[in-house]
Length: 160
Image (cartoon, rainbow, N blue to C red; front, side, top):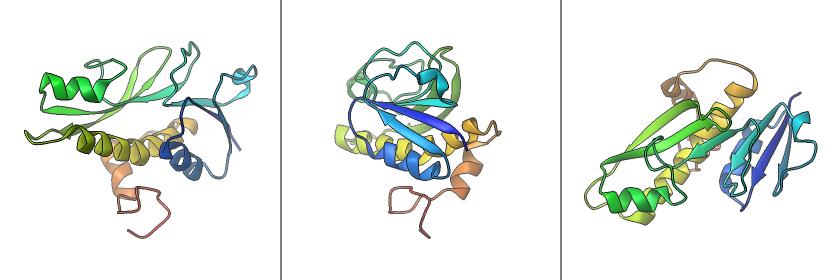
């Protein structure tokens, strides 16, 4: 059994999706960095606003290195770009683990884009975190074919 820390500043359904994906492991959530953070096998950031200098996995709502800001969705809309997405990365090295693109139409509204990126984060991030935790290789398309992409929100526990 692995021990995982989720650091968050505000609740997100992504936390529940990660906990579900790692249900056979010890997953603890913290709104502040615990003193024993080094005791965990993996640290995951979910909407964590505090500066974190250790090794962790994060998910950003843009295709890094573009729009590496506090408000990437707003900045993407204002810039008028046609492709964005999510990036899962290592916080200490800034190494990109994987990215998944989202194409933006001319009539895409901010709320629609934000909702799509949140959905992708809830769907892809837990699958990638599990592979990283167990040091397994993956291809993003194979993960998505095996993962739930149904109307339930990507929990992986239904037949959608």
